[in-house]
Each structure stands twice: as C-alpha cells, then as structure tokens.
Amino acid sequence: MIPSVAVTDEQVKDIQNKTLNARADTIFERKSFKDSIVNKRCVLIIDGFFEWRHA
Image (cartoon, rainbow, N blue to C red):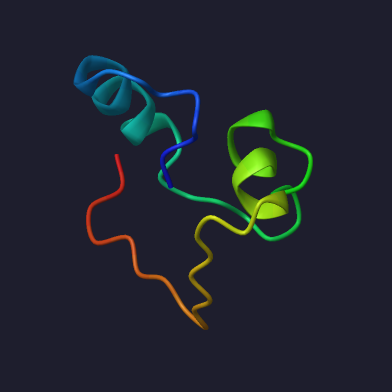
C-alpha cells in the first residue's frame, strides 16, 4: 500500500519498501496505513503470505 502522502515517484519508491507488510493487528495504529483504511482506498484480504527471500 502506498499512503496518500506520497506525491512524487521518488517518495513512492522510498515508502514502498517500508510499507510492504500491513499487519491486521497494527494497521489502524500506523499513520502510513490508517488514512487509507479509514477512507477505504484499498484493502487486500489474504489468508496467507509467503516471504520467498527474507534477509
């Protein structure tokens, strides 16, 4: 999810890696996701996630 505060392509790229995982237990607490969830901009509901390469 890309928050609405991202205006330029550079900001999107910078934020993209930091906001890859939106966790259900903290999604309403984190500023980067809260506005999008409250305004119903985008929600993807999944029942599983596989991190192929975790460093």
